[in-house]
Amino acid sequence: MTRTSNTLLLLLAVLIVAAPMLLKLPGEYGGADGAAKDAIAETGYEPWFEPLWEPPSGEIESLFFALQAALGAGVLGFVLGYRRGQRHK
Image (cartoon, rainbow, N blue to C red; front, side, top):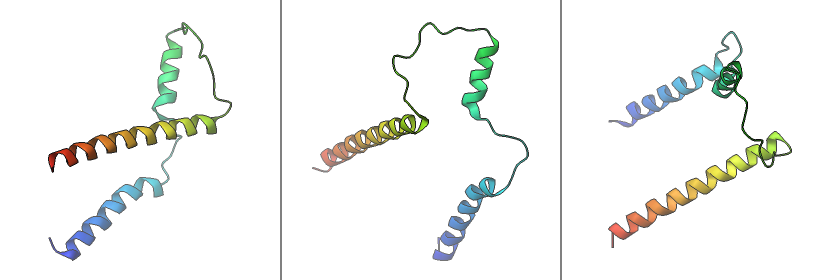
């Protein structure tokens, strides 16, 4: 492919990804978690136990989620890099 066609493909990919963010769609998006919670609540299910500890705020919960994702990505990157290095010895 030529440089111009690569640039056009990149521009097209960016437009495809950005289009839903730029368009205002009618209605409210609640997400899958909210829909699952509502569906479970309709069945009358009662939890068997309560969490041992609840984060004090949503920001702390997001921090833990980000730390978990970073740790997982670091371990995955290390393992893949180590295996590639072993193969090229």
